[in-house]
Amino acid sequence: MKTIWEGDDRAEAVHVGEVLSDELPLLYDEPTLIVTASALLRIRNRKGKIVRLELNPAQLEYERRRGRENIVLKSRQMGISTWVAARFFLKTILQPGTLTLQVAHTQEAAEGIFRIVHRFLENLPEKLRVGPLRTSHASARQIVFPQIDSEYRVESAGDVNAGRGLTIQNLHCSEVARWPGDAAEILQGLRAAMPPSGELVLESTPNGAEGCFWEEWNKAGETGMVQHFFPWWWEPAYRAKAVSAKSLTEEERELMERHGLDREQIGFRRKVHAGLRGLAKQEYPEDAMECFLTSGECFFDVSAIDDRVKEVPEPIATRMGGKLQIWFPPVRGKQYLVAVDTAGGGSEGDYSAAQAIELKHGLQCAELQAKLPPLELAQEVAKLAREYNDAVLVVERNNHGAGVLAYLHSVCRYERIFQQKGQDGWLTSPMERPTMLNLLAAALVETPEIVSSRRLLQECRSFVRLPNGKAGAKSGAHDDCVMAMAVGLATRERMVGAGQRF
Image: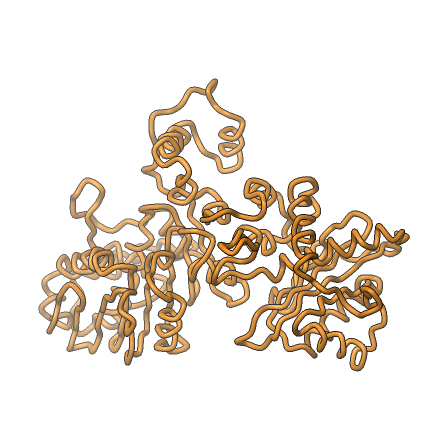
């Protein structure tokens, strides 16, 4: 804990319970926040007793890594909601003029968390409760501190007007994966009510490979939001009778070795899997991708995707704020292609994607995913193709592809452009599309080692068979990396068939 404060008896120095009322606003200080919380706040523990708030491992780790904007993917009952409520309660009472808003998936759930906040208030020293923290209104949805002009509110995500007309300094969004209606629109409205200095926490257990929380989690690298993943073993209470060493499966032994688990924790895991079966990975996650269970029939082999996710290498380099990821740099003498799936671009448009693929083995070497207008996309993919030994540039000419191809000729002066039946670019026709996707599906099973991108694998997981019989991304999900890779593998097969020399 010395990474958060120096352990120099500050708890004694703070004397929160004895501080004079007019000094209360001076107590807020990030380095001493945990000390202050422990001295000041009380919670109800698992046995129903009111006790001092002492942070558990997950809460401490969250506080250690926390940023201004955070997204938390977690197992059940890790205490994250409690700590976020505690943190925001302290900021509300120790910083005059603060409005904190908590939004949960249902009103019942919101009020359940808010009872924790009321317990904080009710167990404060009397000197504080009758002084600057005297409330003018305290209900199941609102606590107002008029003397310090601060307020703590709770609302349901089912209220389309949640947060409207407010200026929110602290926003806690709970169980976002289970928000009803258009969760993305609700979240957008709430974010618009926050000043640049506001603190945001989105937290949830997973609920399928689709929707607002899934999207926010996957694009965290792009938005700068700090990701926190807490699998079930971060909770010390998750233990059961130890299983025998002889009964351990290969999977269990591997899990124990990788994460330092013991046989009591494996005993708990077996109980969970026996009771929840297929939902165990979602309710008590062990991997930040596997836990987003695919509802509906995934087009690709889910087990193959999940197996590969555990093995994918980290990029050796990233550029453009993480939009371009590189795993294998170009090697002299090797030949490459760069396959491009185009989109309209712009901040409100869809993503475009490009895959740099080594021709001989089909190895994915680099991946670009960005919202770029046609000219900028042409410039970036031309730069990438030149870097990879003047690679063959394969641009899907459907939709916006024609504009990208025109810029490649007129502005970028790039000549090595793939042609199909005498025309520049690749045409993804209704007849061609299933063949392309089947090539990618086969590669994930037969040669998964050629896939390097976690981003691509995430898209594969939400690529499903739709009610109309076609295959595509679920509503709210993306498939640009999938389609760029499918174009690349299909082009590579075409070039191999034509006797291309490697």
